[in-house]
Length: 139
Image (tube, rainbow, N blue to C red; front, top):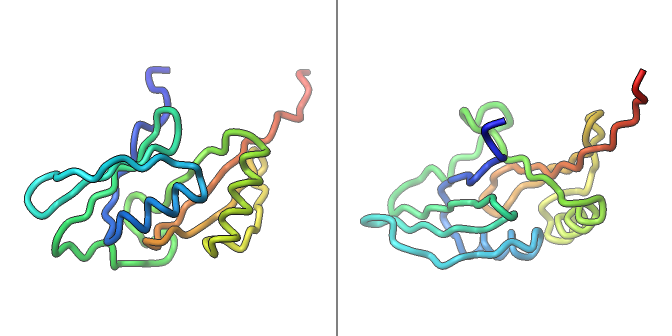
């Protein structure tokens, strides 16, 4: 395979400080400095994994962060799926999501993975996934 996962996901926020604190508290993310990214625009990189980042933009006068629509009505990118590092990490994240009011803690079993949905402070829907071990034996 020529690719090794996702490098970053970019989105627009109204309050990168609030968003950064959420990702730090729930996911142990590391929030980098906020830098100018052009006139009336800043970018903050939030590290969420060894090689995966959230590039969060705050743009003066841009109202896209205010728009919230139901699932499958959000455009080409509907939500972000994050991979839990281990079963223990999955449970810690689940507890932190519930404690922060971002999720009711429901775990869905999608066959190959367990999943928890959440909504971050900007209203972006996210999902944390934990792959299930293969339970089939070779024939």
